[in-house]
Image (cartoon, rainbow, N blue to C red):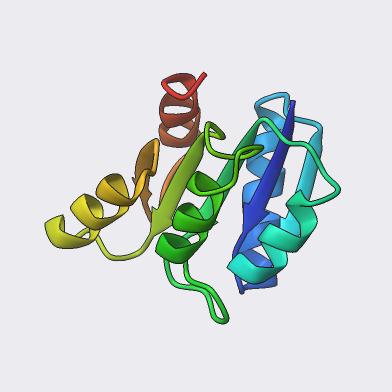
Length: 119
């Protein structure tokens, strides 16, 4: 399964890629922000997007809006990841169309559990 990881921090992208590979997801692609993700998805087909909520140029919420307004990506599962567990942030992401939500820092088990609910 192909997964696109969206985070402005290369270290965080690398950590998520390593976790995904341990879970058996070998095709992992990266984007630095929402705008980069939208551009990547013009030529790349993925089964899921894992996006940080706070990224420059186009944040995670705006990315979800862009994905949901595009016929080819409107049903694409999106796991929103953030360090802010504030209920308002969670609700904002879910209202925008996030499929699920994961709070940093997270474990391999919590990532696996969230991803299992998204297929």
